[in-house]
Length: 242
Ligand code: G3P
Ligand code: CA
Image (cartoon, rainbow, N blue to C red; front, side):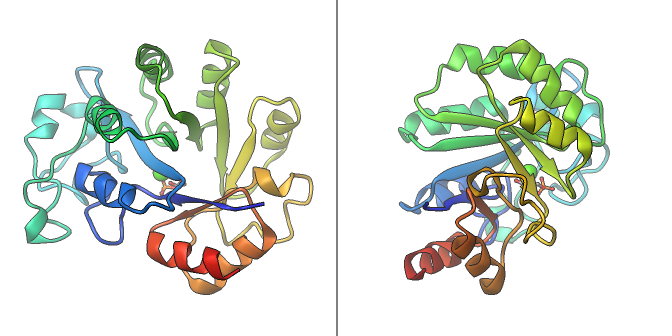
């Protein structure tokens, strides 16, 4: 089985993560299979794409995402922290990402992480599901979260959704959700996966964040489902070699 390559927060190695330029650069890799994004909720209940709950690390402002409206968030510089040449990059809304995927005829897989592990965003699952229902995308959509309640809520909204559990280490609850078919795969911390996920099909394991040559080779050799990485070029090169 061919392990799929996932661009973690876009082409995070070469551009500010979770910005449109990072996604465009990731999509420029013909061999890419999956684009990963992280979704939060703004003060005015819009879906916005950023990794952290707070703004300090990846914008020129501070405070929590949920304390700001989408307009306020989009006025921030989300690129200079990475390199001055990216000063014009802003935090994308989910709308912006969907528009980019439409415009580029994206036909691979969008992996949406619902970032409810540290902050409870009321009804983010419902808002996300409603928006994606309207989109009816031409590509596959997979939802992942560290928060198992979020995955249960999505499953209750729509049994046809493809759901993955992000884990540092699998728990009994995760194993049960997998056996019940609520989640189709488990995406574990890559320091943990080797030889310990014997109760899963290999195709149902997608470790993160795999950036070293040694770890990548192990994932490809084991023929795991997906490899979630910051280094798309290295993953593409090694997958060809193995
Ligand atoms: O896709 C897996 C990975 O994104 C999970 O961790 O913290 O990078 O969102 P994080
Ligand atoms: Ca993520």
